[in-house]
Image 1: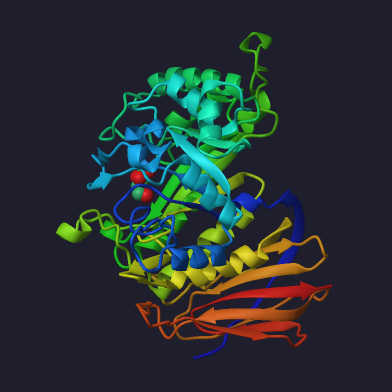
Image 2: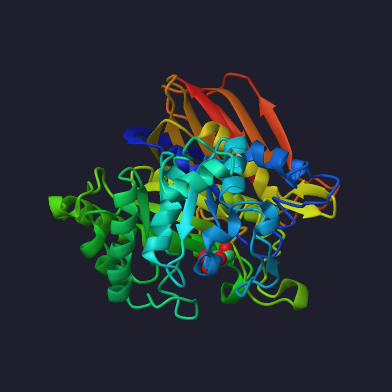
Length: 487
Ligand code: AHR
């Protein structure tokens, strides 16, 4: 088979790439938190029940942001159940995902975990069965200076310094009719969201708020933005690509849908940012200061078709190397829209739709883990527009995607980093750089086949680094490459 050669054009832009694109998410869902992050009694856990093997693997991802406690679960979460003496924590049935939450992993444990990872905490408030006052009290518990009731509860829990939690989600997927909560109607969501906003912002002006958007409903997004633009820092969109009805390459069809949704949503976002009325001083807290950005605060491949009793919602996903290539294409999408996508959280971090999986007292990482960590180390600085013309990927259904998917960034030390995905299953690709740039080092991840996957004790992804100056790159078949360029 011939070895196609593709020439790249690189046009540096000025949009900063948000470090918060490397967020993760943990929810009380099956064994993500209980039995994953926290596993009291396991020989792999420390005295406080935190799984050390999972923590070490999570550190390898260097998450910048961690979202908690849901997801859908947020609609039944009452934060006061998860504070104070462990023995007194309130046990509740997990009515959403099954099992019991003993609430031994609560707010302080979550923030402590974030600190160990170097991640900013991000909390999602309960709009379904909670109140605006309860949410504001949570803000006070987290961020208040000692001297008032809820802040003093934090002090009594052993944390005199405020947690300074800046990022708060005002509800989760409220448009989803089967979920708890009366906010399926956008007018109701807006009315309630304003009430939560007022209570929470009066408690702490510095909060950055994320409101519920719906990538499948342009009318919902317009309504939310028309009303909430004066305070909306981020509009949330969730994206799960899946096989389902879309066939074996469904995730790539999902990727195209997601890119089309972004192209539709971004102009709406810009209009809302530019035309929002200023907040009247009678609100007594400042309005939004910066342009509204998207928060892709749940994203992954998830085929939720039930697969029997022990995998009722398809949450135990095994990610193949093909899925890892898809993950790289999603990260390329975030990089290409750096000015408008302000944060992203992979859903989820451990066991459920996750790059880190426990298996009894052992754990291992899925194929996607390596791609996430490669991008985390290299994608930073400012966006670069990367254009090229390439034939369609023969490994995917006809015409679905070009064989090359790419993004690039310009870093503060003047180096550029290129991220290149070769979607051909069997043919290497030659990529020619503009004359002004030379490759100084490149790291390529690959696996034997699209269908390769990891299992306990079996690692299928290999990583090859080369440091020879060159004007072009040869990308192995089915690979993800990060190449450092100097001018
Ligand atoms: O990540 C699993 C679930 O997917 C989350 O709880 C929910 O927000 C989404 O529908």
